[in-house]
Image (cartoon, rainbow, N blue to C red):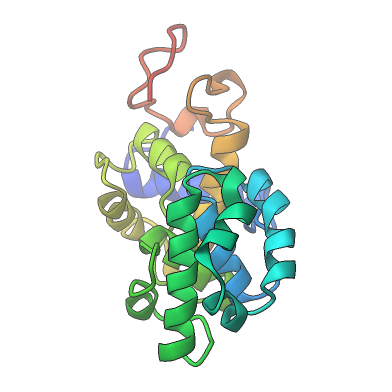
Amino acid sequence: MRVSSITARAEALRERLAQRYPRPRTELSWSSPWELLVATILSAQCTDARVNMVTPALFATWKTVEQMATADPAQIESVIRSTGFFRNKAKNLHASAVRIVIHFGGQVPRTMEEMLTLAGVARKTANVVLSNAYGVHAGIAVDTHVKRISFRLGLTRQTNPDKVEQDLLKLFPLESWGAINHYLVLFGREVCTARKPLCDACELADLCPRTGVISRSASPVT
C-alpha cells in the first residue's frame, strides 16, 4: 500500500503498530509517579535495563520522596553511578525531591507547566510521567528512537526534539499521544534501529520514504 499524504501515512503507522503492540507501556519498572520520575531521569543516556537494575536499591534506601529530599547527594551518586552522568543525575533527583516536598505537598505534579519546574525535567521526561502515571496527554515524548523513526518516515523534517514533537502532535489524535511514544520506542529498538534497520522485515516498509537512509543496499545513516 502506498499512501499519498503524511496524515494518511501517520494513521496507517498508528494502526499497524497498535496491532503489533496491543498493550504498550514503558519498560521502566515503577510503582508510583515518584518512582517513574526517578527512573525516567536516570534513563537519560542509559538503557532501561540498566536503570531497572539500579532502582531497586535506590528505592529501598530512600523509600519516599521525603526521604530523597533529605538524602546526601553524594550517597545518591554511589547508588546510581552505573547509569552514567551520575553526579548531575543525583543533584537533579535531590533538587526535584526537595521542590516536590516544598511546593507540591510531596506529590509529583500533574501538569506540564509544573513538571518543567523540576530539576532535570524537560518535555520528554514530563510527557513520560504525565502519560504513564496520570493518563494526562500533554504531548508526545520524543527520545532518540521517536526522533529517528519520525524523520525516516517523513513525518517531520525537524531535528530539534521539541519541534519534532510539535509536528507529531498535528498528525495523531490526542488520546493516542502516550501510545505513539511507546510504539516508536519499541519499534526503534526491535526493527528500525539506528545503524542496521531491518527494512526487509519491516511492516512499515511500504509507508516509508526512508528519509536519511541512502538506499536499500547501502549502509544506512541516521
